[in-house]
Image (cartoon, rainbow, N blue to C red; front, top):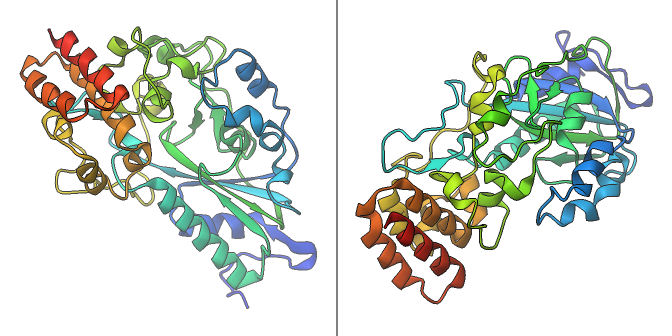
Length: 360
């Protein structure tokens, strides 16, 4: 039986009151929680994005279009979606390395892999609801692991609005949040939850001006073909030569549009920070360290982090480009050694040769 302090949940017809659901997810360590129904989205924005070719090589997105716009296809009997956000980087986003010779990794990837952390928090929240109230009986947890239109669903759940850089902008944490969703077979009475968010961007274009590769459009879309985050994480092949000089010293992800966003200048402290640096050097990898890495060293260095998901070849391709853009000619011998070690790999040799030539 629930304790007197526990918010009431009506068992009839599997209805749960919002305060109980919110309390369960906040207690698990999330900073923001919202809820929405499972009704389909229009998908109009996604359709325009796909029609323009902005999906680049992400062919799995159009293939799962019917499921992305209709969450009911992801869980039989789905009645509600709880959207939970965990904030990160309370000290402020920066887009410059701590000192010369250090490669840039996006802030969200500078510590423990958030996929595992947020999944565990969702499981804890669901277990608490099941233990106290018996529901949900069926559920599905998604942390960047299901075909869900995350920003749209999160906005509909009242967590924020979609910014001009296509990221969710929340009230208290800007865009520096990571999202998780729990689809469940119980209805949640949303009375008293987050009020509808107000527009934030209005006439602001700071993110568009800040993007070094001009990947952001005036109508709030991202052309993945030019996006540094896509190119360094998802893209598997050779990176277009015309974009390489624009990528700076980024080796995984990019925070440029977030750093420029006024919504990220004053934020609250996260409830339960989890992006603590992994390894003795934290996340301050030098080009000298990275260029010496073998596949085995890479695996050990980045075990348990989001960087590991990219894999050695893609990551080292990015390292070559960033080294070439560093302007540090003292790194040429290390690049040449790297080239000799990988002369049988067309992808790595091509990017190493480009970097050597760029350093002059």
